[in-house]
Amino acid sequence: MTFIDSWSNTTTFSSIFHDLESSNLNYVERLWSSWYLYFNNDLFATGLLFFLTHELMYFGRCLPWFIIDRMPYFRRWKIQPTKLPSNKEQWECCKTVFKQHLIFEALPIWLFHPVCQNLNISIDVPFPNWKIMTGQILIFFFAEDLWHYSFHRLFHYGIFYKYIHKIHHRYAAPFGFAAEYAHPVEIMALGFGTVGFPVIYAYVSLHNQQLPPLHLFTICIWITLRLFQAVDSHSGYDFPWSLNKFLPFWAGAEHHDQHHHYFIGNYASSFTWWDWGLGTECGPLAKKRRQDMQHKNAERKAR
Ligand SMILES: [Zn+2]
Ligand SMILES: [Zn+2]
Image (cartoon, rainbow, N blue to C red):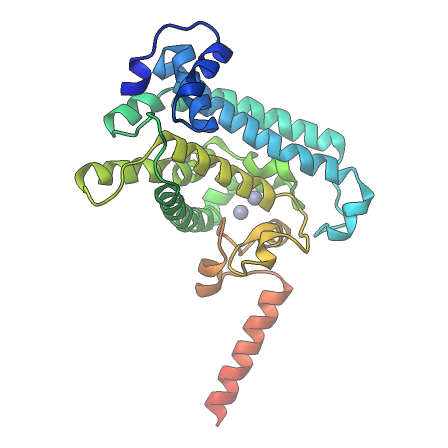
C-alpha cells in the first residue's frame, strides 16, 4: 500500500477524506483509502468492511420489498398474490437470519484479510480498470450459478433435503428476508459459490500472469450484486421492468418463486440456461414447453 503507507497520521475520517481531495483519486477511491487510513489496522478494516457490506446490502435490499408487501398497489405484480407474509412472519425471519450472520459468518469474515494477503488480493488505490472488474464479476456470476445449480439440486435428494434444505423451504411463497433463511450447512455450501470463486481466481492469477490480479473492491461489488440477486429472486414480485424481461436468460424472481411453490425444479440462482438445458425447469410454462417438445418428437418419429 505505497500511497496509504506514506500518509501522515490524521485523526478523523472526514479530515482524512478531506486531505485526499488534492490526490488524483475519485470519490469512491478516497472513501476506500480513508477507511483503511482511519482504522490503521487492515485486518480490522477488511473484517468490518465485509461485515457491514453483508449486513447493509442484505437488509438494506430487503427493506424496499418489505415496504412493497405492505402496499396494495403492487399486489398486481405479486407472483403468488394470495400468499402475503405477515409482519410477524417477516420479523421472525429477519431476526433468525441476523442471528445466524453473527454466529456462523462473523468468524470467516474476520479471517478474510490474511487470505487476501496470501493471495495478493489488493486493497491499494487506485482501483483496477472497470473493464477488468466487470470481466472478473461476470466470471464469478457464471461460476456461482453452476455451483448453485449443482449443490441446490443435490440438496433436494433424500436426507440432504430432510435434514438440511427443508428449512429454506419453510416459505412456499418467499419474501426478501427469506433469501438467507437456511441451515448453516447450506449457508456454508452455497456460500462457497460466492466467496470461494474469487479465492480460486486469485490463486490461479498468482500463477498465471495473463490473468489480471483481483482487487478487494471488486469482491465487494460482486458480493453486493450477488446479495441483490438473492434477495430479489426471493422478493415474490415480477415487474414489467424486471431484468428478466430484458435479459431472457436472467432467472429473476419468477424462476425462484416457482421453485418455492412447486418444491422441485428451477435450481439455478442467476441464469435459466442450466435448468433449461438439463430439463429441470418447473412451472406451467415449462411443463407446456416440454409437452410441446414431446409431441413434436412423437410426430417426427411417426412420419
Ligand atoms: Zn430448494
Ligand atoms: Zn429460495
